[in-house]
Image (cartoon, rainbow, N blue to C red; front, side, top):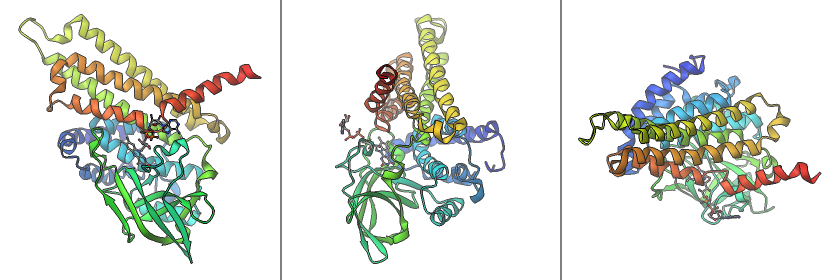
Length: 384
Ligand SMILES: Cc1cc2nc3c(=O)[nH]c(=O)nc-3n(C[C@H](O)[C@H](O)[C@H](O)COP(=O)(O)OP(=O)(O)OC[C@H]3O[C@@H](n4cnc5c(N)ncnc54)[C@H](O)[C@@H]3O)c2cc1C
């Protein structure tokens, strides 16, 4: 099946859902071993998923943000690590296609690489900066040297590093102190991935450190100045809540299957018929429903918005992320209460969902930033 030749969201969802079942089968082992899910990524490349957000002029499909989050959620039902990993690639391409901040020739080059299966992600975080969204300046340094850039530094949390073909790295330009982003092909001398990812959440994302030791790239691989696009809200980041919503849905399904099949000898029916269990499933359903309505409607607002309207959507995007990721944590908690102590077994996927879903709190935007943004927005009309 090739997703470029399926024309409706339903057709694409059907294909992704069948793959996602296979991702689920592989998830426990990849999690236990902290192994990157290479097979899942190859499966997604085979069906051309990795091209869907690229512009049509370069062989992509330019899918909407709404479709993107729906497909990402379906991937995450099978495996959160796969969803977050591929989500960064898909989202970056969507963002570049919408805003075109790169030199057209360089963008055309990267799109052509993507049609051949290349993967890319942004490596912006460093131990010294913490979350780059808080304004920390990279200690990774880019120096001009003739018609090349020489880059030195170390990035942390570089998701999908085992499979990336291009690393889009932020660095401070030595000469001016400005922050730029730089395209570094994987095979560049001096670039190495150091396997440091020891997180208990999303263990299969391969979010290792990337070390840049006198990495030399052509001058035109300086892709953009970060200050230029700083203020624009980033719709594509909704792939993040979509991932955690998918994990929550997987937890619900696991609890449902357990509750239907577990009949302790104190009862003559499965626990699914108990009012207390039904109550919890009702609460889960309410949270999932609220999350879906919020996430999908903000994605559709983005899709239907003019450039000017999109500029105003930052608070909605942040609020959707905050709501969905926090509700996902609550859903996993409720699912575990339904299953009881067995949910803590190493063999139960629920213990993995419990760990994985926490990661959402530490993906951008962070909750406190969103709340302050909302406070400011709430105040504005009364101040006038
Ligand atoms: C699974 C996963 C995948 C990721 N993938 C990527 C990726 O592909 N590429 C990438 O670049 N990054 C990635 N990240 C990194 C992510 O974007 C964050 O940079 C990272 O999680 C660190 O965030 P933090 O809030 O813990 O760090 P910090 O910013 O260091 O925050 C730690 C604590 O200090 C507080 N704090 C720090 N600075 C301030 C401040 N200025 N004002 C107020 N409070 C402050 C925070 O509130 C928080 O409580 C990933 C993270 C995870 C968990």
